Image (cartoon, rainbow, N blue to C red):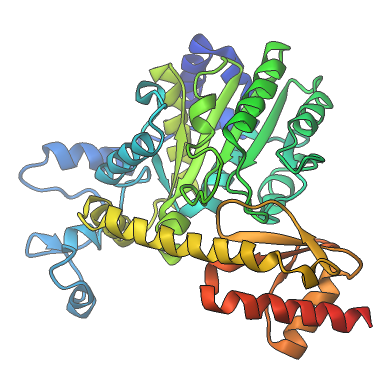
Length: 431
């Protein structure tokens, strides 16, 4: 094992051996090399005469570039913020700004125990980094039964994790804390589990109530007290889109420093929160009261980024940074929230039509982009294909009973027609 990896591992062990035990074998072996990038960083600070280090070309004291590309940005984004490589960990100013946003959005969070967010190539990349750091062949990964299918590729196919699910909802149509507890307890002898919490949930659009969030924390803490190491991965892709009575902070806030055997990892991004899906700017953030552990996890994360994509898009990061610093950010954020909420409200209003009850019920939703129908007697995939072929309506079948509807991409005035067509399709198949 590389001596840099050994030093990082030793630093983690000395602070919290449980966190060391949470690392996968790859996670233990990972480090950030003292190579070209670190030498270039040093030169950037000290080479006042010539800097002949990093592999870019320069012209007239700025990065060499095609003018027709610069013209697309005009004078809004400087060449230095577009064309050179961004650091593997991301632009430092953007990292600082995103941490400010996390603390503003989660006022109960102790900022002193939160590391600086590390820029990822959006959410999936952040999840992949977490999988690499913490999941080995056979590591239990605990998910609700309603989950984003890409988790299978990330945790199961790529890393060999063993996925265990529990029913997301209980009989009272609230978050099923008892089911989560049962799933965790079924792996009590494993030594380590990864618990993945995604709120607002994709596909159902559900976020727990404050009381339910506290129950989740209690379940995890109880398991930790019993000797289980828990990596709590918080997928906050749709954070902030809370329309009704739910918690309005990330559950990351409640889990940060709650127990030495629980390591919270927040994975979020501008992609869905700020409606810049194609920009591919996400973040991974660790919480620990130990600066040494935060540093070690950052170095290992940087090593993974360096060894895969090298760094994320610099233009995207520069634009997101300017957006976060803009006086218009909060104003437009609130405008888009109101628009999204109006669509969610209209969806709920339409779903209460009595004539729909013979075809489906729907899972609770109070947030996010989506909601899910639970079909009574029609196969969801058959209905999906029928709607597409006969009515030109696109939906997503999750399994044999559940049909996901993204109200996020339907104008409020069209939502009633959308569900009328889905009902007509259901009627066709029931004949």
